[in-house]
Length: 263
Image 1: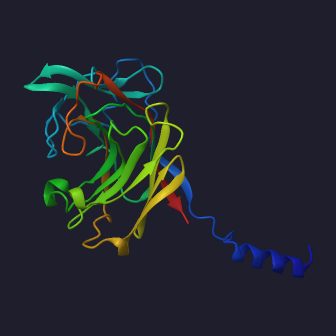
Image 2 (image 1 turned 180 degrees about the vertical axis):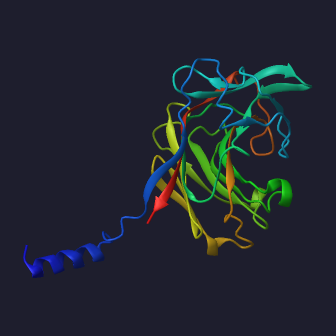
Image 3 (image 1 turned 30 degrees about the vertical axis):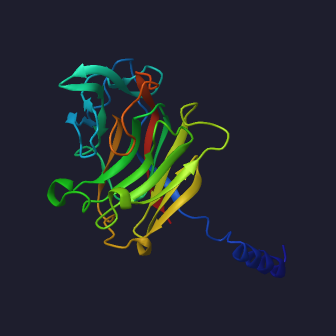
């Protein structure tokens, strides 16, 4: 190639944005949920939040039982909501977190998940600030990588919460499937998070970006966060189950992966 051709090629690449392919990603942590059916998720990675009503008027009691969260023997974690009387509640489920085990600041955080379905079913893949016990919520920050109402099986939401933009005032956006439903098959939900922005993806399609300058309040996403996987029943976001809701309902998680970026 002549020198002139090289210069023209470089100019064309610059004009079409090809000189900046974006960050490359290095896998730094993962859980593939391999193991025998009925095995609890790895205690080195996950802990159980045991109890009820985590501030959203949820109806389930979250347990640490294999009946509610265990490996299925096919390479998945199964978090299962059941209609049963337990500790004064009419439903059970599970909420597992990496708090105190694995905490992350920035990077690409992803999970491949098949969602349940039904009025009042509320699964989520999300992050909370690791300093929550010191500063409280929403000052700690919350990143909802994927949040879903079981009565809307084509729609998921990506959101951030912080001081001045929490709860019903969260910065959020919907992503809707046109030809399928999220309870039909697995889909990948992810964020790419830096000190300047958080990008939200479904199956590697970017649908929502929150930039530091978009936040009308304090940006509270420059410190470590931990991961949460849970299936709630009822609550302010979804309402109670109705006569059409079938139990048990299971969220299957194929894997969770965390990557660091190299510019």
